[in-house]
Image (cartoon, rainbow, N blue to C red):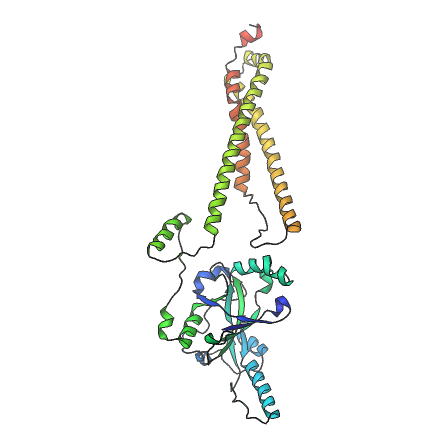
Length: 386
């Protein structure tokens, strides 16, 4: 099969071999643009031309007429086929040859075949292909609604070409990770009819892949192992290895940060031991005038708690600023590459709050022993200088 289009992106229409696959519409419902539908609009018909019996297949003269009568997801099928036939007839007359038979009696309205593509294609195009050919960068939202001419049965490879050709048009309605990595993905009903039309009835019941929906990410490893035990292959996108690598790095850096903060807590403890030694007379006076041990403990622990909160807040602000600065440098100074992220950092509100509690907690932990020692101060011994 062949696909023809792309003028909206590169300035000229390109022709290429069409690699297509099907997927159940319910699996990708959330990935479809809100202005379009991903449905098998020709469900229930038989044969490659069975769609002409559908209510939408009314006679037409232009795409605008179909859009007005049936909505934006329709076009006037057969108009371009008749235009090509008229040119062939004109050439035949000039050569005094017999004109070819008329391929289409009457153009009819037809639904575009809804198409989704993988985000992998967008990343490859924006990261490598566009720079090699000086093409513009793709914004996925801007190309939704782009149409293609599809010719099923045609091929640049002679052994793959078929005598029967079927013309249709497709429209890009979204991007999904459930689409095939290289090629176009359409509702599986279209693929079944094409397989039957160009092969045999058994083809409609043959599947070469399946999408499994798992309730919890914790079950992924077990399900993958079960699939392999059935002598089936699990599609490897590299995401599992990347996630494992990121997890290892996070564990290593998390352990290092705990060690660093633990050392800081020991230093805080030493500092507060010194501060309490210098303030022992002040603490003795407070004990003499009625302050309880709990009061002294709260006073001593209040200082490190405040210091930890303020220092943690400064650290959070610096982290946010440094992250934004790095993202800006990446966006403006580093060339595009496949899967280049918009941001390298995820500052979840829960994480920011935990950072503040982490700072306060370790400061209070470091000052706990000095606070306990201060609470046990004997005011009589301190005030008499003993």
